[in-house]
Image (tube, rainbow, N blue to C red):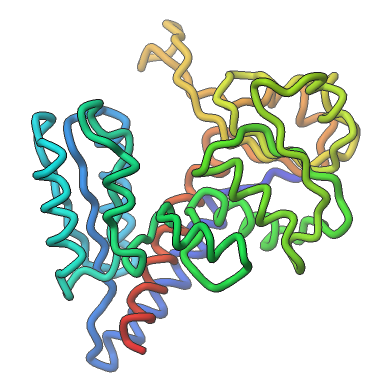
Length: 292
């Protein structure tokens, strides 16, 4: 069994990006600039945005945090989005989700300039991804593909089961695994909370990507020997025996499923670190595109 180490892979990617940024600096070129828009004070969002800012510092990017109060109106946020769209100093930016309930997230994401949409959420970028065109790919699916490739995980002709149909992970993941070429060429089943006989599907899967958000949902009796397991789930489970009062748990019963797996991602330390690394990679792409 091989652990798909997202921490190491993401560190390698950041080192590669830093080399590219250093080359830009040596030529006197402007370095990539990533902005993050955060509305409110959601604890998880604050932590995530903070890690993005630190990642930018490590690779030599410029970064800007636009922190707006919870009371920000939809119109005020859309005005800020328009400012970022027209700011030539900003190469790419993200709008941190979730947004407060009084703001229409879809309307906001639609307002983002597709050329600066380094999250890959805009319908234009999603459509290009589905057609196999070069574009910004949503960071989490992009990170999973990168993990498979860097670990030489065989995908051609394999049966992949993707659990979860969100537009951020499940749907793009199913498209990327089915596309022509490596890593891809899979026969893909997209399963979700309404799927019948889920265990029957997963027992026949060569590759399982679980993005359901249900702690330890995937059990050892639901997988076959030699399966490749990608755990995207990340849930805080109360646990008073830990100093924080909770533990981070994935969708997979790691202790038991790992015994039957050929490759498996841990939680934490698997897919999570890759998401930020691929966001940086998208930002580098945005900077390169703006130079052409």
